[in-house]
Length: 84
Image (spheres, one colour):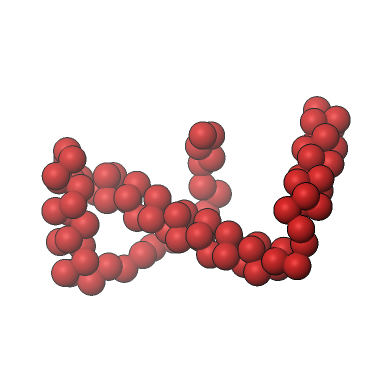
């Protein structure tokens, strides 16, 4: 998986209890420093956004057959490969 440096930074405020829970969760697998917490929050937000986008995609394509979707994906991949 490719890592892309963020172009913008935002501040996320966690409640004291949630912050303690995150620190405890991360410290079970190693250091629970600020960088580790930042990486955890970024991964959690990315995962949330991916799940949300997946649900929206499923809803938007529910009326299209699996075969038609596969064909559309293959066409898009062929086009993307031809752009290199």
